[in-house]
Length: 377
Image 1: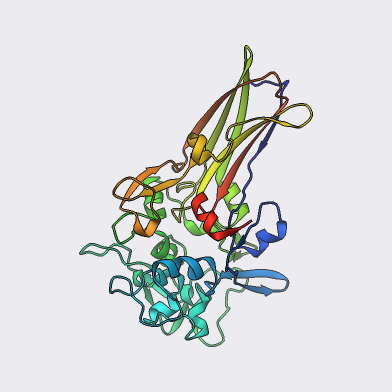
Image 2: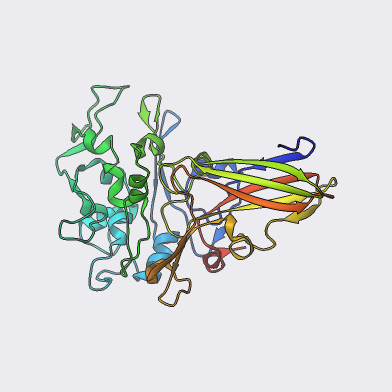
């Protein structure tokens, strides 16, 4: 039964330990922000009549991905000719598609190479070939698509101006690409490192959920007849908080208090999904009548002392030690919430001094060891 004499406070908090994304989310200022070492955020925002039409995250040469991860794994993004195992860097197929289509590596060579996923990248896609090659292996990013050189592509459903035409290029209705998951899966289906260990695997997660959910219905909802091009996802507090349903109940038992926290993933993919270093953890805290903390489920971080409350994808080396994604040779574990899964966390504590409980779910873009290297403060 629910203890009605105990004041319960349930917070689903979305806190970013590193944030390089949405300007809209930054303005609300309701989660923790950190300054990253040597990292700048670049964003193109297209506004018409005071409304945001499209926001494009730009992989500027000093952003988290290009400035830190890419340099560590591949090399200098401003130098032509750098390869990985004798091949063109697969990272650029998704993160710098215009450069990838030209077969270039130096992102400083042309301004458009440094724009990341721009309007033209998506709206010239004419077909989706899939990410799996017939002979085995994967084709990712631009390699998974066919592109048009003569017309702009789209869903063909402009409800506000049905006869609208681009002033230069022909418009082509292509609903098989733009009204399905095809427009997303070239980059978000799956990704393996050079050791064939799965890293990003959102596509397989959606397939395993046996649903019929369309990516764009959630990430590009139609607002006033227009598809929202903010493309919010794992870098948006609003989007992340929608994905998790969290409830808490308590029962008095002699001198103890039994607490049950239930977490339900409301998404058709795992929570969290995408980059393998994203993680979620829960902290439960008890307070006395004066508001002083008298009990906590974790004294440091759940990854160390409350592993059941840690939802993460763990990668390791051949000896079973933790390893970064590019060097991992095996999966050590996966405690993330499966699509539509409900998981229960149970706690027991002496109830003598506890007057209030607070449970908070924290969404983190980086694992603790990575934050020590990348985050200031």
